[in-house]
Length: 272
Picture 1 (cartoon, helix red, strand yellow):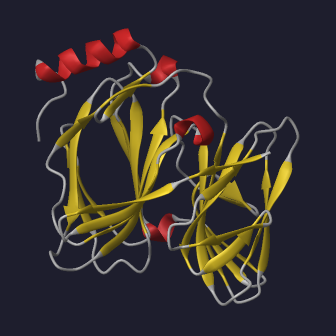
Picture 2 (tube, helix red, strand yellow):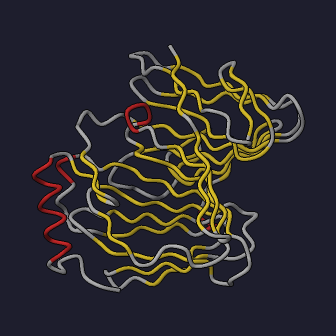
């Protein structure tokens, strides 16, 4: 059985627009994903707790992103690179394009943390563009910033094990991606038109099909029937835990969420 998760358009001023996928009941361990274009400072320094905030820049980004956080981190996220902030019990961070007026093309990915890790100290991981493994197959080029595919494995070891594949397909190409038993998997169109598991997807915001998790391994087949295309494939084992939201915080219990909110108000997340 396949369910369909809506992609919602988001526009914040003239400097940020995105297609947002926010259906954690279908996409766990992913809480949400924004396929975004950002050309200026949009979000002021803001807190996170209970999950990981991940930024991945596509290679066609016109500039890089400056990332800073209350851990003292100051990072350049270059086109093709990835930055993972595991918020744990709380962190404050900020990201903005390095050169105003130039557009960053990116994924903002929110990955839940297992409940046992939501109270851990925050930390950050970074992956430079030249360290992202690449698998080249007939008609397809696959960057592997998270997880593994076709004998290529990302060097990152994040606190929630997930896979992100940045897949570029030639006209007419077909790619099979194995998915382990018990894993969520779905395909987000980036540009062009594809058919994934028999469902047509278009980068204009069509709903994203998410197949039911099964106890058997399976294969996601992706085709590019009408010209070159790019997609992002996500997969991971669902977390069997509730999600309690409050703005940019998500914990596995109402009590933990209240504690995180109080800690932030007391200044315990630190400052930038």
